[in-house]
Amino acid sequence: MKNGEEKYVFIHIEIQGKEDPDFSKRMFTYFYRLFDRFQENIYSIAILTDLSKSNNPQPFQYSFYGTELMYRFNTYKFNEEDIPSLKKSTNPFAIAVLAGIYLHQTEKNYHKRYEVKKKLLKDFILTNPNLKSIYAEALFYFIDYLLYLPHELTKQLTKDLSINIEKEAKHMLYSEKIKEAPTLAEYFKTVREEGFEKGKMEEKRNLAAELLREDFSVEKVAKIVKLSLDEVKEIGKNL
Image (cartoon, rainbow, N blue to C red; front, side, top):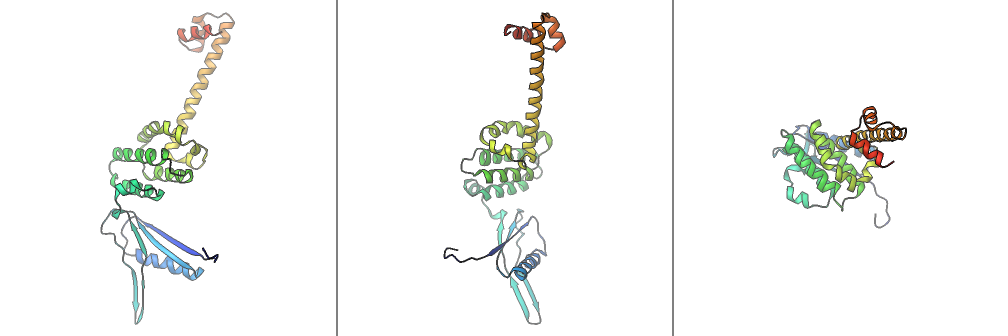
């Protein structure tokens, strides 16, 4: 603390995606277990990620022959957030909330999800100069898994974002964990395949050059290495 005193505060975060009649009781159970074990201050908050207006947990109450208690906890509700305000926010958490809202809004429309996912990854993460790399990596990984897309749309997304990944997010390429994320995994697969094809072509060109030095005809070389006549002629000009 500012006065130099040491103080512990436990933060209990519970993420809930649907209505549960026993949710408040569960929040209290986790609270008293923490308090019983550590005897420290506890801040509890429930993050309600569904968009249902009816999901409104009440305080947990207990009463039995004069023994009574009421346990209240903080709540953060996705359905009360304003999307334009979230987009303007500089808080990295706002990007995660946007992704959570879009998850529900695009539940039955993968093409719409593709568009919002591309915008989130590109505009809010890959090309966002105000976002620290540690947050960028975590948010990219989170959103890439949360907003699931079929394989073909993932391939298209990788293609659309490849330039941004190469230019703006090179630091991510060295993170072993983030390489597992669907979009970047597809990116690395494409890079490996392109590198393999480039290597095969280089081998063909080197072999063609050697054969031409041995006085093989252009036609013969083209047939052996499976290059076009024009490509072999171009190699011969550079010898």
